[in-house]
Structure formats: structure tokens, C-alpha cells
Length: 419
Image (tube, rainbow, N blue to C red):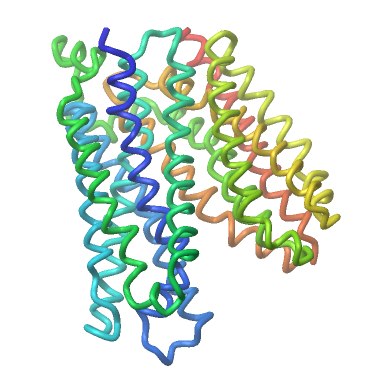
């Protein structure tokens, strides 16, 4: 067995830079809407274009999952993860160097779109691929905890992106940011990318993939094998991931931004969000430890049911416009999300056959995130428009919880066989 800490850091830390780079674009959307479209484009329309490009990156993730899954299941987990971090680092660096619309016209907009597509491809190959690598290198009794800790690196990357944007907003004027300071967070990511790449080049291949190679059980076309032999596991895992895909966006983006709360609360939203993202990280680590001692599937069931039952009343409480109420409600929901997400990686690994594991985990995870996560802002907006009630938007999370419960029900036979 390889050194568990060494393989964990090499496999998991790539998620930090992947999601740091991926999230930066969203946090700097107002800058891109101004600099990468014609100056006469209405601001709202330009912002819509920017988020449309953001959505394209999301939609590229399942394609990236198929591409990197093919490499990961045929050539090894290690080469797939090395290529993933190279693509994300290079595309982020190039984005930071990209000339604006004022310099090269529409070519800048097209280049921005292409770079976001490359980032989406890379993200599609990284997250679930790192789950596969890290957990295959861990002993059975530690997989739940290390899976949760790997998942937590995604949240940490998003948190660091938010922190970097907050720092440049504090240290520079808006004019300076638009003049070129916005490039700094993207360009400096190459330093971390090179460091993490060095770690991955030195990391060993996983014992389980090596065993598959030695016994000549490598499949020539993993995605084809999945669609022929493992469709039920694939669609069950898409359902299981639905709640994880939608809940983070809803609780940490939609909840703080969509309610007509008083000014005193809006001034503190960034601090509250940061505190509760840290709460989510701690909850994931705690429930990852608990899941290593008890039945992972039961913890997933409990987390999904609690979110299903509590999401609507929690959002109703937030409407009271009290700072303390918002802090406590968001913290409570963060704990429930952490409870659900913590056992997910180890559960996905346990039900996925080794010879198609990278592809199956990556494709199901990213397909779910593209459908249920990518559509979350649109569906929430439609519900609010139709019902004139922000609390009713919580029904979307309740729907995703039901989808995940159905997925958990159908995956139970495979989970039992693997235990």
C-alpha cells in the first residue's frame, strides 16, 4: 500500500487549482462582460453572454469525463490526472493573458469561449478522476474519510478564488482592476499548477489499476462498455449526484443573493458565506470520518431526507431578514450538504467496476452536475417568476433530493454486492 498522505495530496490538491481557476471566471463575470464585448452592448445583455459562456464550460464537462475517463481506464489514473492539470493551468494562464475586445475585437470573445471550453473539458476529467485515484490508494477502512477530504478540496478551491477576488477588490480601485489587475488571479495560478504537476508526475499508479493491467482486463472502449453493461449503475449514479450538484449553488449563491434583505445583512453576506463554506468543509470531514465507521448508504439516505424536509421551512426563515437567522439557517443547511456529500466518493467507487471506474464515476458525476447543477439558476428563476415566492424555489432542491433518493434505492443491489 502506498503512503496514504502522499497519494492523497498528489491526487486531491489538483482539485484546488482546477476549481480555483474554474470559479474565478464566475466571480469576475462583471469584468468580462465589460472587456470582452462591444462597448455598445447593454450591460445586462453582456452579462447574459458571459454566463452563457460559463454554461458552455459546464456543458463541456461530460465530454471531458468521457475523454479523460478513456485515458484513465485504458492508460492509467496517473496520466489522465497529469493531462487534466496541464490543460486547466495552461488555459487559465492564457485567459489571464488574453487581449480584450478593444484590442482584437470579436476574436477576443471567441478566444474566451474556446478557453472556457478547454477549462470545462479539464474539470470534467479532474474531480471524479481524483476520487478514483485517491481512494484506490487508500485502505478500505479509510476510503470514506479520504473521499470526503478530496471532495472538500473542490470547496477549498472555490473559497480561495472568492478570497483572491475579495483581496484585489480591497487593494485596487475599480479602474485599476479593469485596466489589468483582473489578470493577476489567473496568471498566478500557473505557479500552483506547476507545483501540483510536479507532485503528480512523482505519484505512483494505483494498485487496483495495476492489477487490472497485469490480469489483462483493460477494456478498449470504456464508455461503450458502460452503455452496454452498466447502464443501471450509470443512471443511478446520475440520480445520486443530483442533490450534491444543485445544493451548493442554491445555498451559497442563490440563498444570499436572491432575497430582498435589508442593507445591514447584505454588507455581511460575504463574511457569512465564507464562515459557512468553512462550516461545510468541517462537516464534510466529520461525516467522512463517521461514514468510515458506519454504513455509507444510510448516511446518504439520512442526509437526503433531512434536506428534503428542511429546505422549504429554512428558506421561509431566511425571509425574516435577520442577520443571525440567516447565519444559522445557512450553517444548518451547510452541515446537511456536508453530510450528504461526504460519503459520495467512496460510495461511487464501491459500486463502480475497476475496469471502467474512472469513466463511470466521471461521466455520471459530470452529467448530473451539467443537468441538475447547470439548470439550477434557470429553474430557480422560473419558479420565482411564476410563484412570486423565493421560498418556493426551494422545491427544486426538494425535487433533486427525491431524485437522489430514487438513485440510492436503485444502487443498493450493487452496493450490497460490493460490500
